[in-house]
Length: 249
Image (cartoon, rainbow, N blue to C red):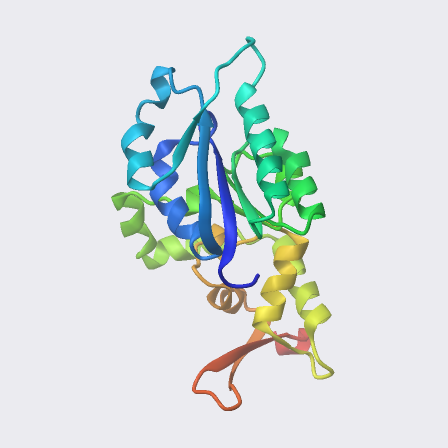
């Protein structure tokens, strides 16, 4: 994903807890500039009152949407209409759709059809159709840590427990992606591997398994070789990975 994308951040206020907003905006900044920031909801409802100070601190524009009919989500409709207006304005490179609602699946697909990058952000309860409709999907739970959980992640036992969540399907995904990106000697540039994994599975994130980067996650599994190489004409080093053969394990 190119740097400094012009992003439209559209938040489903009825569907996202306010406690996530600070970490969420910091995460979005990694992908580009949030040029448009809007949140949708019926602001006459008491349960949205806690958003007020948070919106001011993060310069997010609240969009009022009354619930005209009981049982119908007018907020979703308003957000979808605004997204299409922004798309036709031609001033964005991508969208951040913040919701755990599968109703935005078709919107994400339509935006991608118009060459927009779509980053989905929602809770782990988000239905699979919305997740796979995005270029990248990020779980809010991995962005938000209270003081107790922050202390726990520093504990080695906690890290080992997180690694146990790696499934055979995850290992297969990493292994096949390395094969797909590998040269004749079986080595693949980790950056290419990570990009391919996200194309295959938009919600893949090392932080889901207790790691902040892909390198330590891959290294912890034990099925892969990891090698650092000096980059040509640079002080930086590139990471390459290779599938271990059965005899190497």
